[in-house]
Length: 332
Image (cartoon, rainbow, N blue to C red):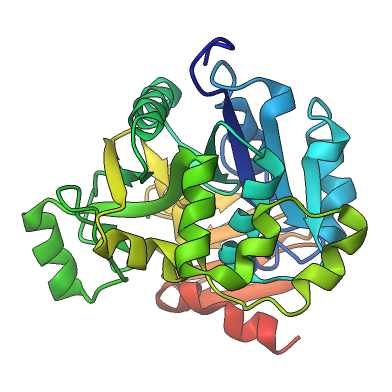
């Protein structure tokens, strides 16, 4: 984005997730955004790299958790240290985006995730540029809606005609949404900073103190009383009912890589449909995913499993249960 554009563009990357769906590869100390299993670079590195040419490094901000500050700064040495901010406690994306508004101060801003993949970077950048142009001209928050590849129940949807948000549906509703031309809600939002601030004032006033800029030594005290609520629930759903949301469609190979089944999409398969990464031996098995970052792993006569080994832990789970790893993480 040119420096002499009407509104200087700033980008915020949210990087506070715990990556529970990739345990044990992902841990609270080294969550999903630091994994280097897709594309050779960490997901957070890819998130910053695909912004090159859209925004200057000094205008890229990262909101992470306080415990991940050092690791994030090591991963992104080109960003100013002060631009990487650690939340003192988890308050979901509502607080994280309100804090982002305060960090950006003015101009036009975009909010992106640190743990997604984009296959077509040029297509992504073209969609962002279009969204910035749309947002600069009106008091609306623009979301990038992703063209669905299937009737997924894993994502929320947005109606590109009205900007109306709908929550994650069952399969029947997902199929109906596709017929209506609905798009996936990828959680990428672009708008003028003052538009974001006004939206918080109208729909989430409890989070408004963060929007004005908070001194870092007062961040804990400011966060303590805040509600734990997502930006979608706190702001976007109400805003969409008022006509305050616009949608720019995108078809640039977006993938949430939400769990281990993503290995089936990005890794080669053997003759029996197994994915093997690391020191694994899979015999008389089909449709399994076997990953080892530590000891040798052997699978015999068992199919449709996810088997993951690190130096600290081993996971064995049917593929049908691979999306429920939070149950294990909750047990400690």
